[in-house]
Image 1 (cartoon, rainbow, N blue to C red):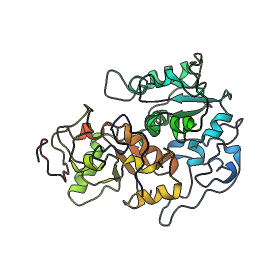
Image 2 (image 1 turned 180 degrees about the vertical axis):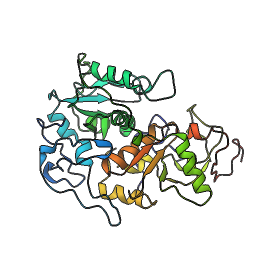
Image 3 (image 1 turned 45 degrees about the horizontal axis):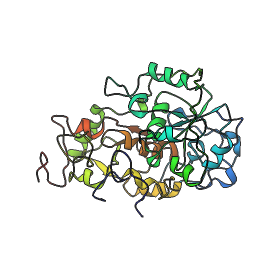
Image 4 (image 1 turned 135 degrees about the vertical axis):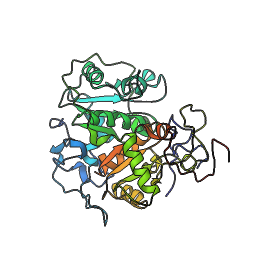
Length: 366
């Protein structure tokens, strides 16, 4: 399997995070998702998504979802309801029931040109609390989305730079707070630009949306005590029945480095959580930034023992890279997944918890 060579994320110089190389949209056409086996734009109707997501674009056909690979208990292909392509989006930009949101990492990128009609959400202020280390509050997120015209039946399409890394974070926050129609543009901003599609410098007018964020879904977020329980069980040779996936690069996972060069968020210890397997987030995308086919995605994670038969917890360094894997595993493959957004900067700074350090570094010294 080749390592994607798409542009690096803002969290690391390399897309793997390893610098060493190491709505219902009933009034809209169904998303055309041919790459993942949905022929001619036909999609699975009314599939109940993980975390209660209602199917998007169910009017597109009644073709059955592809069967899962052998040994996997999950048979649905959720991609038809959670991923749209550039062709579908271009045809639906004027649909009042579709809201397009850019979540990019490069400062000023949105202002220099964005998908026409798209609203700009800044991940460091719009999706997180600016006072506490936490996600944005329910009240503040309700206010934000109403200002940008989000209604309960709005189909939200998120996209961004760096292979949709922070667009996936936005999808997690929307889903965490109970929005039912959340999708991601396949290939993100890079795919739109590569096809020569139009960009605009005009920001949309403020909206008057009516959607209200629900209480955060506890089934989508893991906290430190749960992760410590998994780690201690793994350390003692037992199991809690949960798969733990570290999506950082190999050098971070082994403890060779604390964090990618140039980034200040780090921990006093290097390594990974006991029991974790390592599948870098960028393994899920092709060189053009689009998601790999469903069957290939299943194989990538199944090779590390993650096949959907057990609940999954994903983590990275500060939580955002892991949202991309959360999206792949839960929203495309339909697995039961929590995001541990405290991630390594919380766990690696916690006193009295077990750490695996394959590189033999202690306090940064080999």
